[in-house]
Image (cartoon, rainbow, N blue to C red):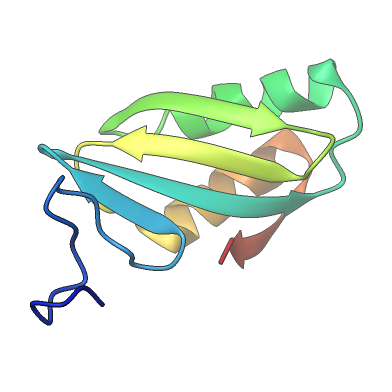
Length: 95
């Protein structure tokens, strides 16, 4: 928390675990297991990108992290279903 008791900094970013809320959009980072290459990254990005409200997805096989920017917080079960459809496993939000 900041000195004023808020989790948000004066610049508008928030410390909310794996979720960052800024100017009408939400960025959440998830851990995905099983990604090993750029093809994996593309498959996961494509499936998550089809969820309503998602504006961008960045997957990194090397770290197993997938960063999703959306209009509002996403239902984790929808993200889990998309990752499953791509053939991988959602391990939850990154902390």
